Image 1 (cartoon, rainbow, N blue to C red):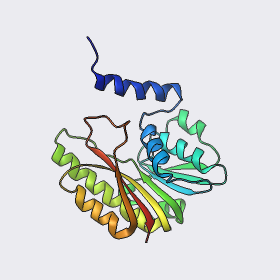
Image 2: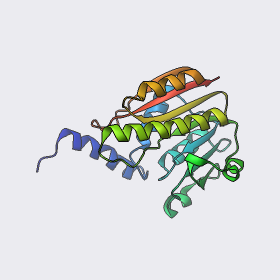
Image 3: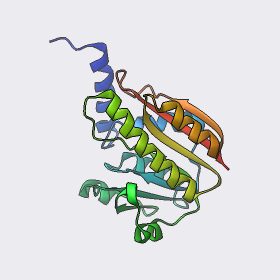
Image 4: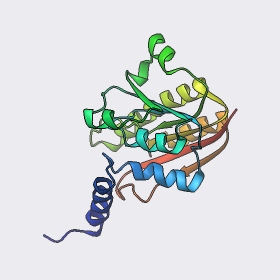
Length: 202
């Protein structure tokens, strides 16, 4: 059966990820954001929320360099394959981002330059329900970013477009000096995902 252009496009990024030894094609979304906005810099301290399977974690660690630091949090542990690849400037903790405990807060610390979140809810197929669940995750990510970012820090967050999209953008506007919305080319064309980027935490 002949493949559609959409499938060829999806295959392109999947194959590219395998070739470049990344576990997920989602790494190219962060790459596109980085190329356009230069969110992560050398020596930065970065918090990666919902970091599994680890592609964003590894890429961010490369961007910050050895004198930077990247901390990941996810309900799921990283695979042994990724754990073995973690450089000295990256670490990961297993925990629930939705209810970060005092113990976890103590481990991950604060004073971050950047908080990134590629979190997504388990999808139901109902776009309204999925968008509402995405909004709740994003609100949690934003609260964490507001608590743990340094003044002037940046925030990158994936959200599913729905009736709460503007509400979330407005929330980001209240906490950051500048905001951008961005849909990477590496996102699947049928996907409702969008990235909201906040610059200059107030």
